[in-house]
Length: 593
Image 1 (cartoon, rainbow, N blue to C red):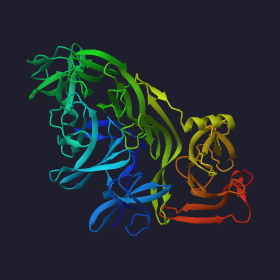
Image 2 (cartoon, rainbow, N blue to C red; image 1 turned 90 degrees about the vertical axis):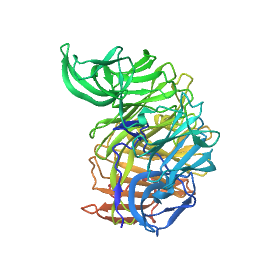
Image 3 (cartoon, rainbow, N blue to C red; image 1 turned 135 degrees about the vertical axis):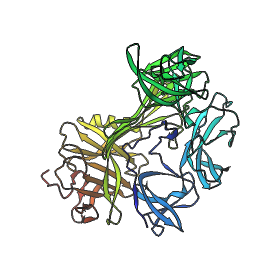
Image 4 (spheres, one colour; image 1 turned 45 degrees about the vertical axis):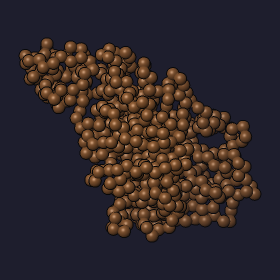
């Protein structure tokens, strides 16, 4: 028996912080590729062991999830199929054959680790160097332990420049520490305080000479006098309301050195983190400032928008930065911003680094994705960013008998940066900038939404399919084909602004490139008004070498039933008249448009 689990994300973005809510240390990295762990893994055309094998993959190969999981049982073992995108097609892989945890080392991003629970008593670690498999290392595991997170915190103040890897289990305060030691992981045996892995909630004193008392009263005996940024365990942050010196506030119920006590919470913040690199440094969030404190003194601070948490990430493969600090924002409802604002610390100064937030509402989403070099899909010495707007909608299953839920982009703009010696982002010249220059020259009133590259005319140089919206006449979109050249620029081949009309927002589209041409899909559905019925058009274009152009050869129209339980297909084949891309339209458009 199978059924669908739809993992519906408000934000399809990589939020790259870690959170401690209720003592659970959670890595918020999402939208990362799935990494194949086992050898000779079959990728299938549908979620069945009997379906066609599309490809056979090996350890380290990466796939992009669509976030649809389909439960199944194979050989008596329950599990689920992961829906992925492979070469512009939907494909399925069995969940037990992939790595749940994969990343690159902070200290050397040429090394990549894939981690998987191979059995109830063993964790497997597969190590790659420059995409070449070099070793497999087993790590003994006590029975009945479930691995919840594996991540690197980089080097620490007492790790002798060795990178520390944390294996976190489901039970509170249950973890293993290993160090990267000349190509292998070895147990880290030194004492390393990692408060974020504890089940308790820490708080930090925000002023000097703060009294903690035996009762929640200004008249109760003083147990101790604390200094900034002494830490305590918070039992109840807003334990008792009171008025002191005509100011209303709350006493916090705390524990200090195993003794319960109370402190006026004006002098306590739960928003703090102790530096992993320097034991004398603590970072606090207070009154819209991020503050760096060393030996009880403020050494730097920066204005921020206060968030819901503060966490440290190591340097994520950027050697110019000592530590990244994230201010995490949690959305409590649709339409609210969530994600991370990221700051850098070089041992002396705090600096704003990058915005990694977004917002979702129903099926709609927009936001920023930041990909650091230590991410499994990261690039050495490069920060990659993606700004995206999109929508999650119902689409037909491959056999049209049902519906699945998938996400598509209206806008997807990728950029890349290096980091200078001062820790500042420096833009790199990428294809995005080249495409935008082309648009400025050829389409004055158009704004880039997304593009895809491929060698259209087989001359060994990448060409581009470009999707734009016309800001002057906002009820139509423009598609263009641009040919690349040896100078690294683009020249217009052909364009069409008669294919996509709309009332307000442009519809969702995808361009899938194959060896013979491309397919344009137009999704007339979802959260926008439009002049057409709820349907999907798929227009197939074939590259004609004789005329160096694309011609429309097939149109498929998919129409959902009234309850979206199945889909009807209408097919048109164009054989007699040659319809070039620049002159083409779909059947629901009148030729006068």
